[in-house]
Length: 532
Image (cartoon, rainbow, N blue to C red; front, side):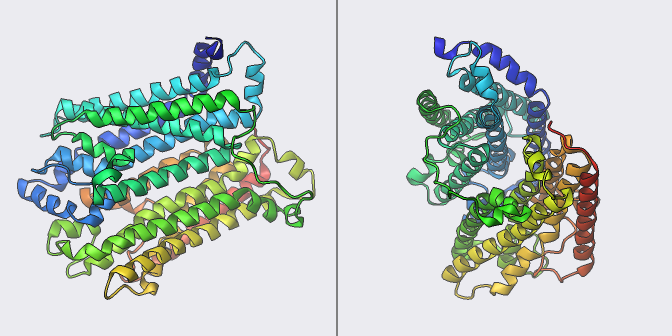
């Protein structure tokens, strides 16, 4: 078929381009998946502990956060799947979004695909080669995860269950890659492709949360909910996998058909007509920075507000939560005699603070993205300093971090107010969110430092982000070393209003973030522009 001429050559070329990016993602996801498995044998060391955890996970709040308790008796395999599967699938989705956007819309935006199309390359060869790379990456992740989990020989985590779980990771990853390909046909910029893909992921997560709690048809819509229908380590049903494969096939076919009819460099969604003359605000560094980050910032603010509403709504059935269990207290870090509902609320704000760090880091790294696309030379040809160009992105990132935490807090408060007879004070919810800001600023400061010092290694900030999220999500359950937790972005911050406010870690972390930011700006102002 001439439409797919030289797909193999482009496939090999793509693999060569991703010889660093792809292995790092695969190793990181497999490491996160495998390293957590033995921790669950330490969390629950006896059948009694497993039974207590099972009762805990029947609560709608935990079902919405993690997933349904799909089998009893509660085993290590079921426990691992319920608490880890959704987060692993989200990581796999993020990898596929960046992979597809890089090889399709970003290359098209940069003019690289136009060069490739001047060669004897079929119109659909780039899409098919990208899909081939995605298939290879997701198969590798699924296979390595299955082998790694089976190698532990943990009780109830059978080889068949491990292979099924690995297959789930693979097919859901393929669905995410197909979704990104479809979004790439609709949107005209790589930024909008990433934003649209993440928005789709957010919708799928909310549908999964509602489906997990309510059951019925909703539990078959989102792949993040369908995975529990396969009953890993407790029946090993394979028919839901075919549902996911059918969804992947439909989405991929639609993407291929749309790719065949759209113009190169354009998206199928109509673009909003711009003004005949640029706004005066665009003549300033801040105006340009705001124009480049505005849509993403607003979208993330809405997402955090909706997530707050979703999690706040589960407090209406919180009385079914067993507050006297020591295991439950360990999950949500409530001290002896602490308010379990208030403690759970602070735990939600801690997890979402990690999520809020994602757009803030991306905002700070936007200048580096513009640098790689060779868009800064015309800017610096004017009377604009490098520091003056960097400061607006940092300032917007800081403001965005506050906005996201407030959006989450107001969403939580509105939902909690509607379902609780004695709701939390708005001030307590805001404090729970605001106290996490130094952790977000620390991650942003590290991104600034890497931009100035190691511009080719800015992705290292995501490694530290991953460690911080790991410590937040698993640390309280697995009794990770306190020294390890403290060095992560949020480990040293108090869980206010449950804990007493301690200004020392708040001030120290804010100070470190400022030092990293200033050092990064100074280094950036002294180095040459780099386009790779």
